[in-house]
Length: 242
Length: 203
Image (cartoon, rainbow over all chains, first blue to last red; front, side, top):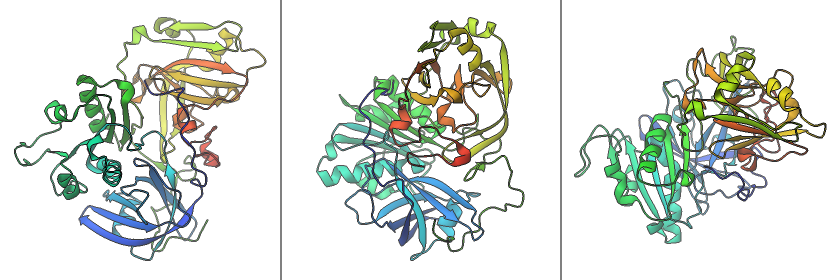
């Protein structure tokens, strides 16, 4: 059960306005991804877990926009996005291949008041692929606030090279579940209850983010491990294949 | 709006489908899943849908009672606020008009709050679910609606962004005022007309 009558999430005055952000840093952690760090004028602070919309406009006025989770935290002077380059992605191929330092991108945000963590309650985060990005924002916030102990993470990818922010997550003692290669003592394989059991704690909220099949199986595991459905917040993306 | 983005030309558009509202793209055969909560596993035979609030005859229909009503089909396009649209798709169920005719809305009713078994809610003007514009559906492309897409039964309001088409629908409550639902309280638009790009509050 998701909250239907709880307090409304505070609206973020001004967050709906389109702003012209300037690309300040571009890095390519792999051939299939890009990290963009943008300077946003008159920025409205976000909460870990929220996202922005990035809009690209062609010379004839045609535009395309997509949503991307923030990896950064409010104290960061820039906002940071990790973007998977999808082979036929109209926006992601532009961001990965063409965008460069100094470019101006239209952005809108922060958006989303449900998949957010205020670093004030115990939480388990389970992310797959680029679904780890909002969890990285949560991790950074927990560290800054000195409450690392509140957040337990399990993150999944095909390989360590494919895992966004792999090094940062390893350093944070996240459970690393790789489907195509072993990691330390863990054999290759998808996320199972064995990965999650050590992370389960009392009075814990859960944040699950990833592809639709990943989110479905991860949220099922958490239910089977006894977490109440009302405490599981899910963010799904991409096609289903069904 | 600022000027064009340096170096961005976008997909070829000479054949852009006129069925696509502004800012939307054709997702083709895909049917993405976007849900904020755990997908419930519901037994169809135990599902009920009610219409209550400002109506003369509050009514609750069981699965078999719903199937005994006059059925109808929607053929057309659906549009998700995350910018995908699915064109030329088909859902089957019963028109919301049929349910409302039986429940008899009072004159004071102006809005509807749709509620799901998960606690999800969404608000709609009554005018957006009457006049052949909304359905309660249990089939998609002739097959039982998959639970990830709201099966066994969901609301379908295809002329508005798809978060208005509440999955796992269990009730419609008629009100004399607008009462924000789940996403609407979390920053999304109260009406959500894709042709006017009413994505977020303030659009």
